[in-house]
Image 1 (cartoon, rainbow, N blue to C red):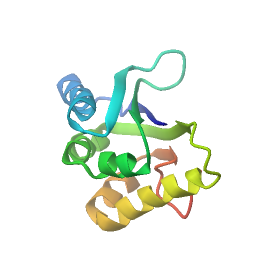
Image 2: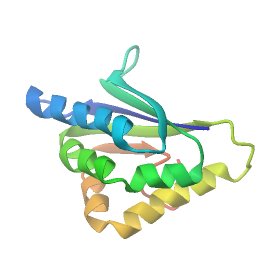
Image 3: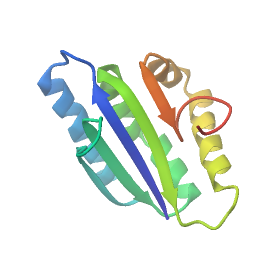
Image 4: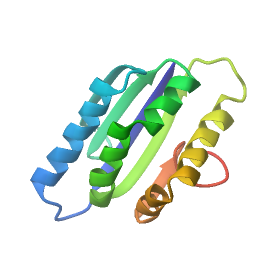
Length: 138
C-alpha cells in the first residue's frame, strides 16, 4: 500500500469560497478515482500547515491512475493558485528498495507530459516532497 499525503497552507487573502471549492475537489478525488482505496481530507492539526489529505492506493499502477485522473488535474487547476506552501510525502509498506525512485519517476513523468501543470507548481512559494519537480524525490 502507498499512503500519499499532501499538506498545505493557503496564501493570505484567498477567498474562503475558493478554498472550500478546492478542498471539496480534493474530497471528490477520493470518491471518484477508482484506485483510491480510502482517503481523508481536512484541517491539518498540530503543525504549520492548514489543510491536508491522504489517499490510500494499492500499488504503482494505481498511483499513476490517481496522478493522471481528470479529478486530480481539476484540483490542481483550481487549488494550486491558492496555495502558499505545499509538501507531499508517501508512506508505504512495499518491500521494493526502489519504490521511492519509482514514485518520483511517476511524478516527473506527469510534469513532463503536462507542461501547464509544471508551470502551476513552479509558481508555488514552497514545494517539497515526493511530488516536487526535480531530478529525484526530496
